Image (tube, rainbow, N blue to C red; front, side):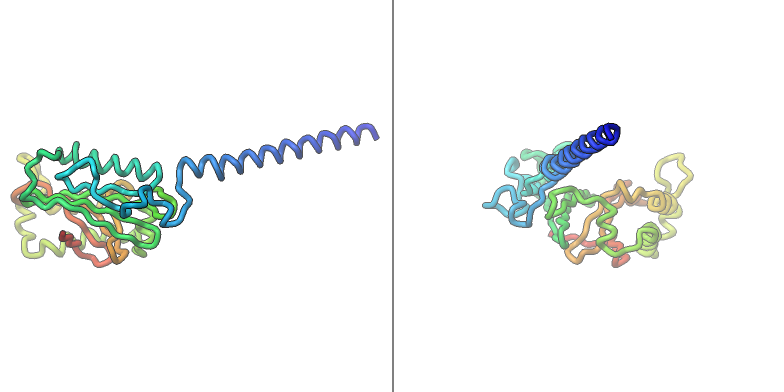
Length: 247
């Protein structure tokens, strides 16, 4: 009888520890982790500054039209920093830059819970694009897989579609691409270099976004037979054509 009593006591203590452990896990998961990594809120409460729109010009710059994401989350803060670094480090722009004659703007689109921002800079005939995506419900960055799923395109067919878009666009200039090489001494011609680039592109790492129709748009590099060696273009995978962006 005494042996069964000891077992009962042990069982009771085990249950107590289990309940305490589960309670601690639920608290950390629901309150601590959620508070630090996401913003579980509606589209109104997620706004950081209620007096401003969800996207507005970065107030730290008077001349550069740089988007600022007005969302109260850690990922929004990271994306704002990423955008600023892109403008100031990659493009090397500042308020003293001579950019008056070149298009420099951004646009943004909302599809269900996804907010997509596309930044555009076109000095001379060269295109520079930057895209970021954030969830309007959680305040977290939206990854490429979620964008692909939201666009209803078949992931396995994306690269073939990209090759077709490029192939169709140079139909009248195909011979020029065949004859041109990328660098002196290289045997690979411009056509093959573009095709190989598209076929080997990492869909996880490349930048993409959803346009105002919820269509998947992917930013790609394209090797040119003349002028600037590399230019950036945007491919609309749903429409199977290049995306045109105007201010």
